[in-house]
Length: 204
Image (tube, rainbow, N blue to C red; front, top):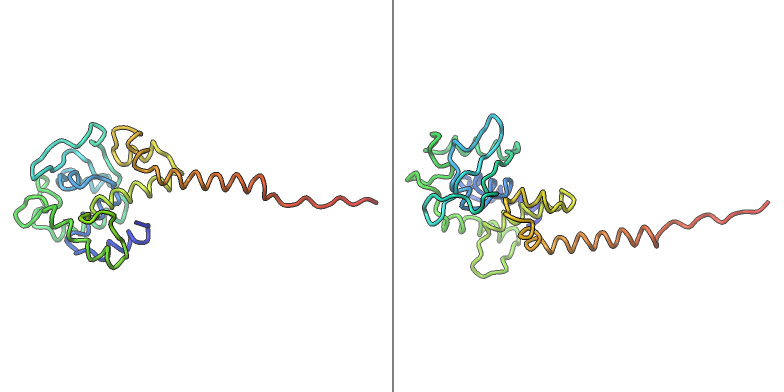
């Protein structure tokens, strides 16, 4: 998704899911990691989110890799969204899940997959796979934005996404690296072949 589409998406999804989708995109964490967040993991004072666990098939587990246990900065938009989410939540103790259903358990992933479908349609976002509903698209978009705005810094993007190695990041974002290489080649071409003509010398 483009940055413009991503921004518009947040205004189109159901209000009780808005903070969840913003967390996926802005913090760049995995769906299971977001579902595993408890209010004790959200430090409003320091504006940080601590990824300490994940939900897999309805059960708590450790994050995917050692590097997946990490802290993510909470920018102003996300800070405000999570405060608003807590204000409308029925479960707000430190031990409660941030993204809890009416039973106190984490949101149902199937319902989450359905939630952005209408928004994607309105934004003209099409999935390559027939049954893809876009939750991973938010994380992938987060990585794309991070890569783009760090000047193609693979290490920074790897750390942002919690990948266990830069090889995973390289494999995932090859298309962006090719685009960056084309831009570099074009810049090089302009520097060498499109120099302004030196003024002709005059003789007295």
